[in-house]
Structures are given as C-alpha cells and as structure tokens.
Image (tube, rainbow, N blue to C red; front, top):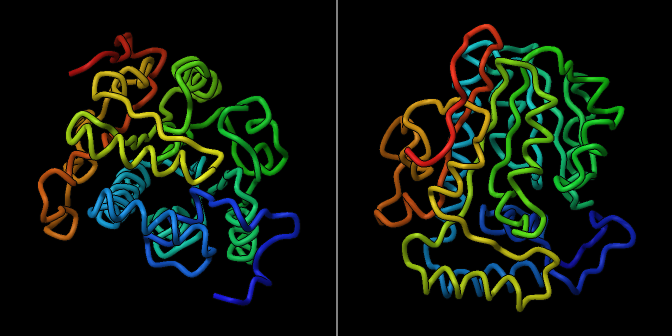
Length: 284
C-alpha cells in the first residue's frame, strides 16, 4: 500500500517488523514493503509459513476458549501483534462478556492499531512494552488498572518467547511473571522449533537475521519448551505440536504433517497452594 498514514511517527520504514510480517502472512493490510519482502523470503525457504501462523491463531482460539470456559476472566497477551480477526478479547468475551484483556507489544504499529480497535471496549487495553522487562510490564497503569493479580490471570505468550536469547535466561524471565500470578492462573506458550527440518528452520532464522530485523529466532527443543513451564502443572495433552493441542476439527490441522509440529505449544496451570501437588517440570 502507498498510503502510510497509519504508520506512527518515528517508525523506520526501511527495517522490517516481526509483528507486521506476521500480519502479512495472515493476509492483513498493516504491513510495509520491507515486511512483505521478509515474508516472501520466509515463504521461499519455509513454504508452510502461512499455515504455521494460521495454526497458531487456531491454537490461540482453542486455548483461550478452554480457559474462559473454566472460569478465567483475565488475560495478559504479551507479544500480541497487530489486531486481526479472532483477537483474544473477541474469543474470551464470546464465552463471558465480562472478560478483561490487556494486550502488550513492543511494536508501536501493533499497539496503535490495538488502541484504535479497543477504543470502545472498557474491558480491554493496549500497552507498548517489552516481554523482557516484566517489572515494567506488570507495573503499567493499564495493566494494574484492569487486571487483579490476586485472582487468576491467563498469561499468553504466543510465538514470542523464541525471540528471547539464551543469555537473557528465558526460564528466569518467565519465573518473574509466574511469581506475580495468583494460584489457579495459567500460562500459554507457542514456540518455534527446529526439532524437525533443522536445515529448513536454520534458513528461516537466517532470513529474519539478514533482514536487519531487531528480533532473531532462537529455536528450542520440546524438552526446553516444556522446561519453561517450571512451576506449572501441564494441562493435557502437555507440550505438543500446536495443531495437536485439542484440535476441534480438520481446519485445525495442516495438510503437511510436519507443519503440525513445527511449533511446540502448551498450557500450564499454577497450582493451588493448598493442593499439595508438585508443579510439573521437564519433558513428558
């Protein structure tokens, strides 16, 4: 598109954004030429990339519906991206209209459009902040004003933790969020892996790095993703391919079997203090 009025002031339009590229792969309209170029390069090395992001949205829908149906009324979606069809608040509020949702993303385009979308919904908010700074995220007035951390909260981390580098210690980082969550809270993760098609996924990561994007993919094994749920009890079926987490029909499954397990996904519940049960950690 030639009209860039929707781009917030100060955005470097020569550097691609992961959030905008994701929007492009989903068929959205809020992306730039550099984002589409990175998306097209990704499709060349990973032809199933569109299916992968579609399956991720399907997993999001199933996980949020599952949690809302079990009484969760608060959702903190970090790395939420650019608004598209089937956002968390739409899914959750379809189950229970009083659900409250805070979207967090470091991309200013994603946050600007989220705020436009949510302007008339007092049970939602959007914050520009970085997953890597939990003290900042959890102290924002939009977060503390809408979410009660003495009650269960669903922490959603879809396709975002794989941008956290090993030296940034993702386990310790996520533990800071976990420690602020009340018993009965949940964490939802989807995370790209190179357990299969290692060379293809290496080329996909190279595509992101060579694009001058500020984010680089860090793949983790199934065991490593499972370990991120330290302090949680895994909800059945545990950490599995994102298409295989409680699929509801053929539309939740890709035609190529390998696309169904190219992203590990899981849902964990923070145990009740009085349950006496040990949190689940480690590979299943």
